[in-house]
Image 1 (cartoon, rainbow, N blue to C red):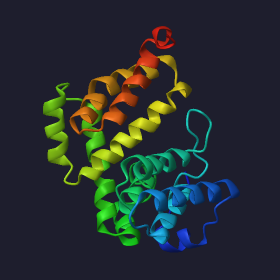
Image 2 (image 1 turned 90 degrees about the vertical axis):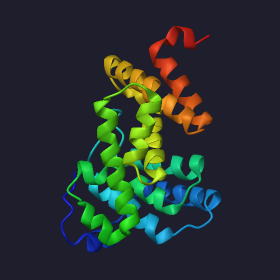
Image 3 (image 1 turned 60 degrees about the vertical axis):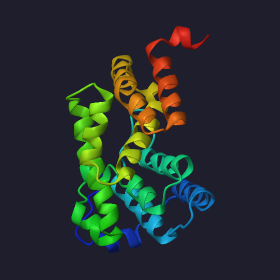
Length: 218
């Protein structure tokens, strides 16, 4: 993890993306222009660079660079949910405050209060998902909505879990089962209640593939 100091704007400004990162950024911006009404390229580019900078040298279980995860979450926000560039920006940074030296105040300084609040909201509801105080989807949805003042927070969390499920094969079998069970019990029912039927169906298919792989083949 790269240490991001207090002069965050300057670090973002001088940070050079490698060739693969440049390709990823171009693909994300192209998707945003195709899917969103308005696109602040400078905002998304700054977030992309901070994402790469703050997660520098960190790997996922698959061995891939960690920054690819938030980038894929951002692509889901743009291509599947078609919300706005602020939610794409927050998706790029959804793990940054929790996992790196970047602070909420720094995100507010560079990306504004709306993006900061989205990042903060994702961090807060992540704790609720992990604690799983209730398995009743209806009650759980009310709890999540009461905490998430902005519905985009919940959508970023869905996108985060969706990409994690799409890449779950890199995890040990027991962790796969744990995540698949959690997704089937919480995320799929919640997606259904939000009217996200395509996402709900993909959650269920991905879970079924993990929980009962032999039957899934047929």
